[in-house]
Length: 426
Ligand SMILES: *Cc1c(COP(=O)(O)O)cnc(C)c1O
Image (cartoon, rainbow, N blue to C red; front, side, top):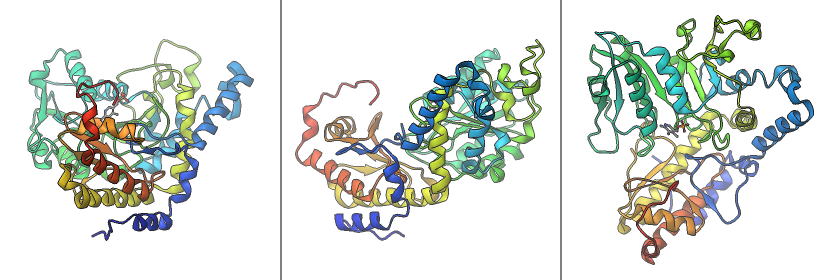
């Protein structure tokens, strides 16, 4: 489908034609370093820096008055970020809040929607999901005095990389209350068929929640069509909101009015919040799921970061992301196969996310060697190097260089100088 050449001038030519190229200079690219880890922690941008520093200045000037300054910008910051996030989800801003971490937000949605009965009490997850999601689900099951051994259904992978839609559907028995899945699997980058899975679950009376960690900011979503019940995501991966940036939570408007499982004063209606009554008066939309005071400095970088998405457009971002990752796969197939490298992610555009899952039996030591050669990838056990050329700030030429370096690491046996013992945060 794509026509590529193994030639650096071809890569440079693609960069010249790239309509997103002007965005590169808005990011703090480090000289002589190729950053390929935007799927773990997105790069800092000048826009995010500016919106963060403005909030710092406002704190310095205003003190406690910061909550009322600028028409309540900081008091209502979740609402403002929701507005800027809504186009990425194709959801209403009222269905979105900016808060918490992925894991904390999973606790919130399950505390809200998981009401097991004798007949319906099971939660379906997949065996390839990120551990933290599973810990959260297990703990919620235990909080209901149930045993995860009985109440948790884990859909197995047939190939240790992907999950078959049919296997998920087969797990949707009549005792299932909730299906909790990632949109894109963190290791293999498989993009699940969210529409079919959600529709099928709903036909069977099952609620569906999605973890959008690896699709938010990489892939356009259509939540008006998918009609999922709830979703969570982080804003520090593809959204570039900064390390530990506050995350996001979506509650389908059909569930407005349902009592939040975890309640706090920021979920109270604005009009009565400061009366501090001991009767919770829940806000009418997703804001009812807020808990406490907004983490201002983990939220304000998002104002700048999301401005870039507004200008670039998520469809254009996805288009380049598919193209540049296809180029990376082409070069891997073309140049790196003889050196033991293989592509582990699905090949079809509609089934893959924003990163390439590069497999090699020496993946760990290669990933360390890459860092010493100023290429920043990440490594996931047991044998995966994740490479994410990001549409907003990576170039085709960088992709070309990374593949050359991957080849050199094997040809010159550079990885052999490193220990196989794992460090932390690789
Ligand atoms: C990144 C990621 C997380 C991280 O959770 P936090 O609570 O934000 O630290 C959780 N789940 C998935 C699937 C992820 O990709």
